[in-house]
Image 1 (cartoon, rainbow, N blue to C red):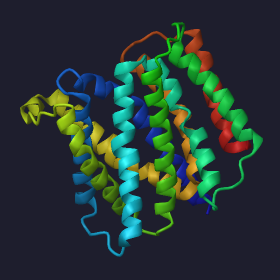
Image 2 (image 1 turned 135 degrees about the vertical axis):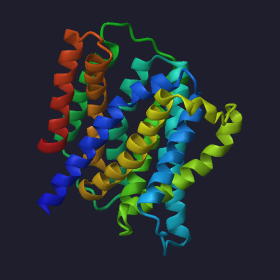
Image 3 (image 1 turned 180 degrees about the vertical axis):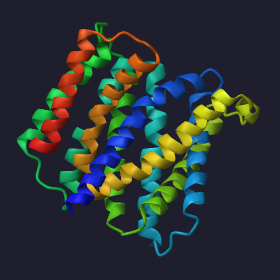
Length: 292
């Protein structure tokens, strides 16, 4: 059992390390692709990769379980990323970074309302949440002024809530006992299906000739194979083993990984605010995950 839990922690840690570096690939791709195009292509690639790895069908689901898969695809694949991307066009990236990190709190509240198998929340969780949010605020703002934009900030808050819903839904799905790859693939299928109307709304262009250059192709493959196919499987495995709440607190690490990637890859400066923010964020994670 302890070995399985260790695998769960390592799986989720791998997930957030990859997710924390995806901004680099996304930044490169935005030169040639719209956000909705990146989103669609990466999950199609992810779906095909999971199909290739495990081609057998998911059987014996039934209508109620299919609705749960559909809801997970709608919340965690389609709406979460759309809300986040739209929020980034309406408000500052620092605002979005801070607000999205509220997702573990929403997950904790929803788990208490809907999941009987999740344990009781202790004061340590909320203390860790406060410490981590202070650290994330320092990392995200980093000396700049915080400007509120009601529309964009609300969309970011909605995205955080949608990710919490996704975590709760995947926790329910894990109780069905299906293989994690098969359930993740089914979630991707519904997410892509719900994404199709947004393609027309945001002016989607197939334009696969843009992938003739190796730079956009490799970055899109990284998002599709790594950040989508691999990471959603490892995240869902973590939720299955550790629970929705304990897994969700690893979201605190994403800004820390982003800062590390910015310094190492983009040679961006490392300030005292980002250093202090990193320490506080890591402390908040430890308090929430291991002390509570």
